Image (tube, rainbow, N blue to C red; front, side, top):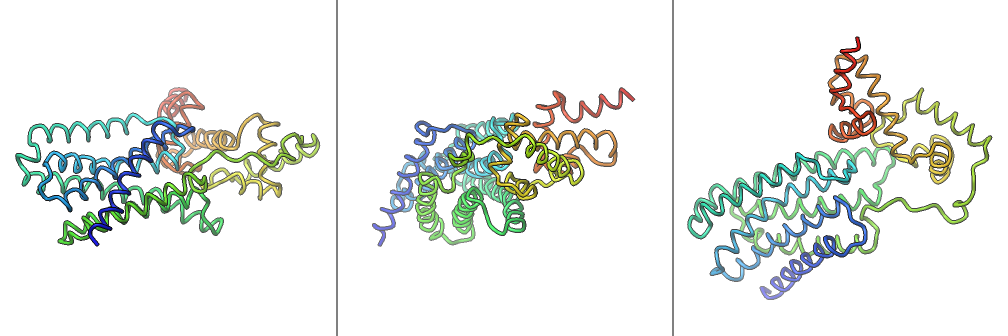
Length: 351
């Protein structure tokens, strides 16, 4: 039985390293979210590999244990930043993320150099390991905080999850189970630490690989409309009517304030197919769906900054439809060439 467990656990770690190398080096589409996913898989692979080696070889060199525990420190942050990058459509890693990751790396290097595991295992087991698990636990909770409301909202509005949401749910569920297996070890359940975690990781990895290579769950660019629509122009009179109805939805009903608004939802409100709305925006307004919605959100935000003085800048961002403070601030600066605070200050000077 132990040989079977060892085989499947090692196979999972080996495949995990191969998958992360593929995402880093050979995948055709490069993105911040893809690199963060690869980093997450790599950190998990190293951490799981350490557990497997220790379970089957108690005399393993202490450096292996130190490296495995050090990798564990980054599992939670990579998980959280991955979800943020996907859900908030962040294309470049923010400065505060860089600072956090560099700080964690610097801390674990300093500790590992001044008090290496082989010299002071008690210090690591009592303080460092518990600190690492606290960071992991906080990040798992934070990941759920940004993901679960999104899933609940989709279930409420559309009665089902999108392929991307299913993919993210699978990643989160796998990480929660793996984290729980390691947390149980702290409370005296070593079988979970050494057996359940590695086996769940192997299964979780196969789910990820299946989802990625079958293009069913991994985030993708929207597919083009069927060929019969590609060269079909919207009649000028029809386009004028649709644009009038669109203006009504935007200006009177302020549909853009819905943070879960999607192309299909807006198209349903106009009673037209999604591809036709996309064509209307691109051909008649010269912009895609996301930039179009964000422009109206920022316009509304400017009005609120000027009039709703009881709301914080972050609150205004949520009020106009943004899911996070960082996305609101980034989009505002991109369109207005000022931060919300600078814009507010400019208004106060003018008045």
